[in-house]
Amino acid sequence: MQDLWKVIVNPNAGSGRGSREWDEISDLLKAAGIKFSSEFSQFKYNSIDLVKKAYQEGYRKFIAVGGDGTIHEVVSGIMSLNTQDPDVLLAVIPVGTGNDWGREWGVTTDHKQAVELIAKGHSKIQDVAEVHSIKNGKDNTRFMVNIGGLGFDANVCYKVDGYKDEGKTGNTLYIRGLLRAFFGYTNKRFKIDVDGERLYEGPVFSTAFGIGKFSGGGMMQTPEALPDDGLLEVTVIKKIPKLKVLFNIKKLFTGEIYTIKQVIHTKAREVHVETFPVAKVEVDGEAVGFCPVTVSMLPHALHIIAP
Image (cartoon, rainbow, N blue to C red; front, side):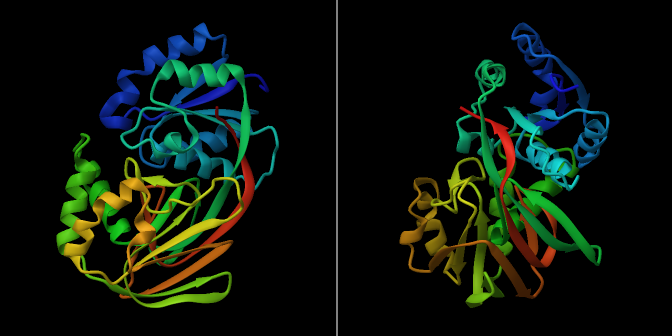
């Protein structure tokens, strides 16, 4: 099994691109001499169980065909095995809407490029974060490979997830979710501790903690994040007039968010956040639960295929 890849395909990724483009991807993998077997996820979070089952069968190399949510599920499956197996390797063929993990590492939506990277086998190591939030009154443990957050950012993810659950698709889902969340959102009171010390207490518009820089299809809420430095980049947008948010939206895409007066940031190995009222939590663009939330770094925990 050591040379055989397990391909996890999300057929719904990218408004159905995962399904429509699988034959092309499969042909490219075969042409490159990559030996694999494939599984299609049947429902949300199914990829987590598919990865765990494949590992028990002897697979150590995984290819995620999907978007950032698919990568999140595959990584959560790997990390939930509580193994530091050095043979475990992740590759990604992006077919999602945002593809922010791929943007970070230079893995493009060109399937030929992604397959060539897998064939070359050049690997790197990146950090992962363990995230504990509350869901249905119980601890919900997930593993973050890119960016998470709470406040306004998480509300957008919950709106978008709602649209997807209703069967809606398309590249405008995030914009629709953003607008709907924006006009209905009010600041909450946060207590934010980093590495055991209080960073900020007071009204907050949004908070993000990032291993990578990009989210929401190219926005940079954590522009100084590095995926392999063992640290989270923590960005806090304090109470801010909504009109000012609109005027500064461009800075989210240019990496200039830290020039905004109401924004503070730091690096940390662990972040703990409590809110009043209770706030939603998102991880890698997926709605995962509610506060309180604790995010702890797992440095150099994941071997990946990257340029």
